Length: 529
Image 1: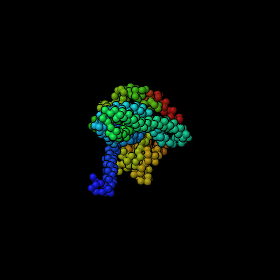
Image 2: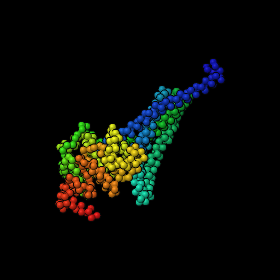
Image 3: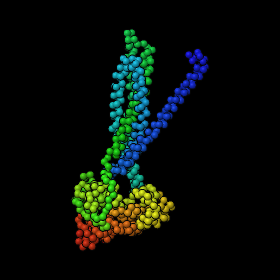
């Protein structure tokens, strides 16, 4: 009609314009689909990462002692990316292709219910075959992602221990360990991808097999003169059926990727479903009288008992030193006070109130902790000292640094208090890092101070400066000091000797020396060493 009314050339031009317009609209819709899908895709991944970080911050310390850091990093990076590509990336396909298949199927049903019934018998058989391939994918995919966690663990350990690796010439040993684990990951993932890549050809082959069977069945109907089928009708039906193969193939590929991605979802859920610390009530508490351990028993994961039926009373304002052999339970005892771990038996009370009835946040607000290993962050000096505190003014930070004997060296830094100290404070010396940790505790102004081997890793000059800073920090404050060097705790109000999770003796330095027991033996060993 268009040819008759407008002429051949005009009709040809209109057809060309129509083709261009249709392709333009097709690609415009595609761009718009990706445009609106992008915030959905990235938003889901952003929320997953945020949920993981939030959950990690809520987990108890015991979780991190059991779980390898590399495995956690693998879940946050590799597994989240796998979810993005395997699952979120398949959303478009899972929305579009089933609708396309349904339209074709309804059309075929209208054209011939007999042929379509035959097709509906063939399709489940094909789906079952492809499903069996998909099920075989899960186990190697799970092992592969776990092995990836081991690979990242080795890299993380390499970065953390680079100085020791080079000092002991262990580069080849570390590389050998990495190479072995990396090759195991390579073998597992090769198996995964081979099975994944089998899905699309298998789907296409099953489609062509179905097409051949359909040709045979339909051909017989045409040859049967009584069926009412003709060749032109059957060719049209076959053309529509052949269009189903590509979306069916795309769906099978999407399902394979989803099955592989579900392994990563399960690993991420190991973090999201892990039991968190009980937050408890948020009402603020004070410390006015006494901190008491009452027949306390504790073991990590119900293994060997670390603290065994221990009782100890610490008065407000007292300095109590915990001494004894390594592994005796001193640090563990200190970690029970802020409830980094919960006890298995007995009770710990603050002014007569069981600490389990106090919220974690208000309980920990009472405490300041300085450990042997200075824990600092890749940030400025100012932000490290003011860490965890709001509305801090520079004058208060400077005052805290002066008390910690840190102001002088901070002032000599390129940008003073705004100098970035690098990863884990790597741009500073050990003594400088420790004094920043002390400044952080000074600024917090805690009621209870826990010092865990705060000077044991320092040289003599740094130890003198740090010890002086600690003495300023401990003034008029309840302090629990864990020390190997007994010379640093001789003036404590109470010295408690702990062996194998039990208190074997306690008293002042003169009393324990006169007692001729374990403390005197430790003291004399250090005096002659």
